[in-house]
Image 1 (tube, rainbow, N blue to C red):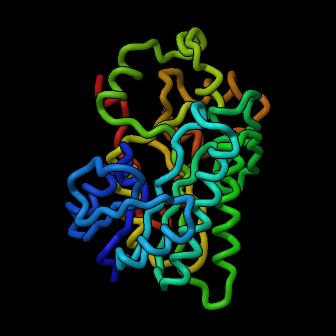
Image 2: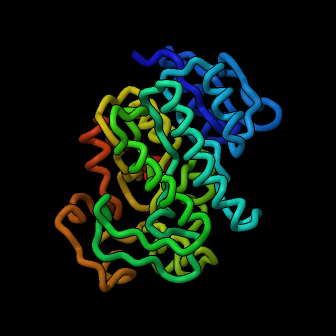
Length: 298
């Protein structure tokens, strides 16, 4: 039974909310982050350089954790050299997985990203073979950020293949942009969300490459908690998304216009504004269904 959860990057925007949610659900939490503490809900705080294998091992050992949620990576690549971005995603994840294995920690959740597919930081249009995208879709990242996310998933595959492997349960959560109420109001209610309106914005390329996706903090932290409580064997990749797109234009029209070469599958017909990302696997593994939509703010 999971009683203590170590959360790397608990000082971050998502990490703070994950710690608060886990605490509300009765878990003991330990925040493993660099620098000074920047939240007040964790039961313990351990200053940890996540790119130092020894510090990762030492902090996880001291935390006495039953599960690890690894969020402590560079959230966007714009302000760091490529090699630092790659290190943050790939090496820190490997260190967490190795330390968890040596310490007998059964469960690890890794913050992967839509960027493993390609995503918003790609200079060219991301390859989209079919919609909605699911876990079987091929990955074609070219940036240090996306390659790093793909690499952490490959590392998790390898760790899971080991005989008598620990961690026994590993989930790579492919997060899109995570919003709170304030960011959602500013982004979705104060701009023209039709396709023609979105084309006038400076970030249309990024929105196209991220499949007009997002997820609310409330749904994201709920999924993390369910991941901590999971007990499947091996490593699973899981797409994360809100139930709808960030666009006002119906999803079938959006797909036909923006992704004309992509095969359109039946699941895309479920709802006028159905997400272009299929989260059925998250529902099957974790009994998780995203509930929050920006349209409820209107």
